[in-house]
Length: 191
Image (cartoon, rainbow, N blue to C red; front, side, top):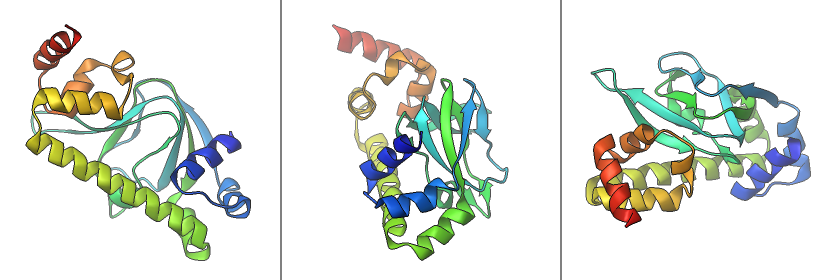
């Protein structure tokens, strides 16, 4: 599993074996069952997460109590950094496993100390933060400027094959459309 974490890190920003060992000794590995809410909006959360295997989503509830999907995270990825997803150590979002999930975590305070001590780890963390902000801005621009069909095509490009593994209601919510609209679009594109 440790080689998998190193691969996730190096795909984002390569670091030396020495820097990786500083992270590795603080990692904790967990298996989460499908449909587990492992971060809950409003609750304290002081961890950083690596997704080793599986799929999860971030979401919020709208005023009517309906889930609105914000993002998806797949095998070999990094969850949104704590500093983006929390305010005063309380989560702004909820996260749920959409499949069984294998994760590795590191206490965020420990990781922040490693960033202060090690330039490579700091550069890795800054790259993760930058990539997350770029993804969020691109999604906002897409919601404001693309048609529903264009948003579905962009989703398929960003998350190849994901439609086959998760509920379509989560995809429709992410795209800002209804399930019926998604079904129509999928039929239209299949023709």
